[in-house]
Image 1 (spheres, one colour):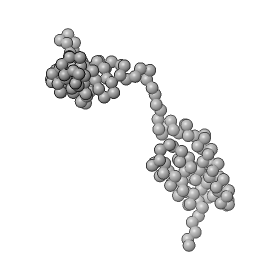
Image 2 (cartoon, helix red, strand yellow):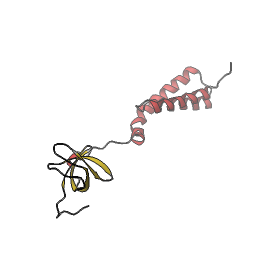
Image 3 (cartoon, helix red, strand yellow):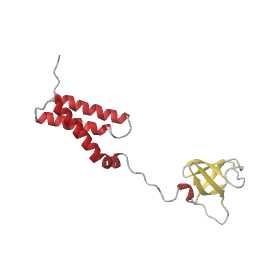
Length: 153
């Protein structure tokens, strides 16, 4: 039976933890990979017993988890920032073109910003009419026909 060195074994265990981290969400298993690689480094530099290696693995994993998780999570995962006003409360103030007739209360379709949107209006609007987008609510917009005094944007 071939003998595998503890350094190689801990290094491979670290790689296995990193692969599992890609599959399992939570950003915790990553730190066990760091612990395994710290143990591999210690085993490379000194001759320590298996029980000492396990203690080093546990201590390094928990220390990095506690000390670095929040900091690294901001780097790798990003931060969430809530706007003061929800997006649907902010007026859009742009124009689009009706691509599918709007007959209230049924919605139609509008093209604006390079995309097609479900659109609602207070009055019927026929296809080809230039409209002003006055509000966006999730994936739906509220529109009204562009008056002759308003300019197209």
